[in-house]
Image (cartoon, rainbow, N blue to C red):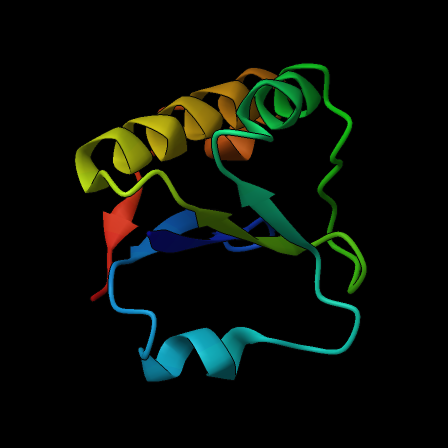
Amino acid sequence: MIKAYINYPNPHVTAHYDSNCGNIQAQHKPNQRHRLINIATVSEELQNFRDKKYSFAATQERNDMWLEIDFQDQVFEIGILEYISRLLGMHYSQFAGLTPTRHC
């Protein structure tokens, strides 16, 4: 499983392979947007990103999101995250061409 942080005002997508990483807790805030992507939710969640159901803006409510991607296959999980990054780039120029980075 990976946890990924998407930030809009300072556009970046960061993958965390270690669920005990201190940055994961440091980035959480009240009413944080969080999405679980696994075998049961993958189709719906990818369609939501493709259809721009999740909006991003420079406001506290919409400036970021955490994804928990769990397929018990890190290579596949990163592939899903890269695809989500490309989908975001189709809707938001700030994300265009952005490659997810690995933190831990």
